[in-house]
Image (cartoon, rainbow, N blue to C red; front, side, top):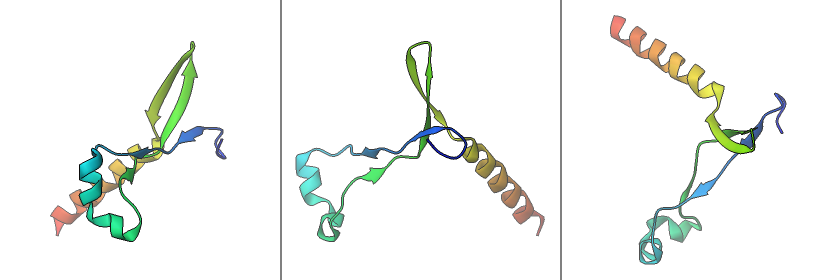
Length: 73
């Protein structure tokens, strides 16, 4: 649980099959695959839900603001 009382999930994902993993160029550096974006976990009426973090909405607003400002110049 984080400081806001949320349960945040980070996950490791892959969509590669075994032969694709063997050919992956990052293997030489000791890693393959990637992390997913963190998500808030919510248990409601016995169902587990994954929801985007509120910080993503704020980041999207900030990006729009910068893009709008960029077009002003």
